[in-house]
Image 1 (cartoon, rainbow, N blue to C red):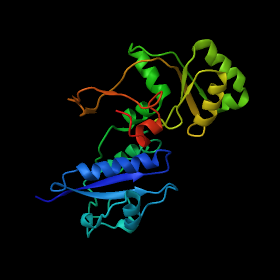
Image 2: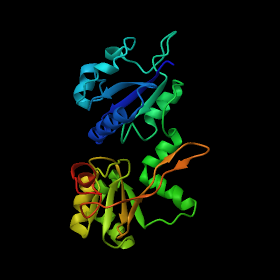
Image 3: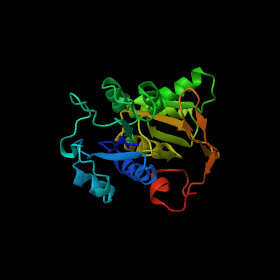
Image 4: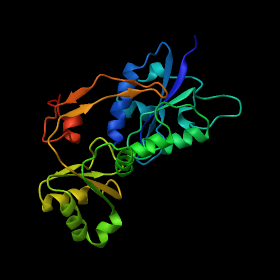
Length: 257
């Protein structure tokens, strides 16, 4: 049986570039290489396509055993050639903007290339925390008090924005870039000074910000796989090593459980 060629896209211009590389490494370790030929397709932080040697450097792995003699590593296009299908399926392991927000998914759908993961609507809705919370609300799912705003409003009158937040949501607050993951740019604010500093940093990652009420609860995670008949994993509980499960607790600390 011939191997299915799986294009593994990772890296990218997002603030989650390094996290994406970790995810790609995990996929390379776990994928059944007797059935699938993973084709690493790295994207550098400047948005340019990585060469095969760049891929090896980014992943810190010897990929020589994965070389496909028919694949144009140094001149790759996601398009289809006139008579040859370069890849059977794309596995996007990009994180954050352009990777999880429906952008790459829409590109692949336009080119009729099968891919792993959610489609355009599911990706874009799930990526934008503001839109996602409004969809949840419309279906009667309980939501913590939240306030969302864009950078222009903050630039025009930051004090007015903070007044509005404080009038609606008691401290502590969680400040989040609306379109970012891995807790990048997320801050917990206990007072107005924390709030201002957290918003200023979060705006480095997105033009829209979501501020939520912080509550002391257990953090439970589940994984879901499938479309019409999805499978749900057993719930797992996260025990962060810090006050909350921030980027450091997720990826840099060995103390989180």
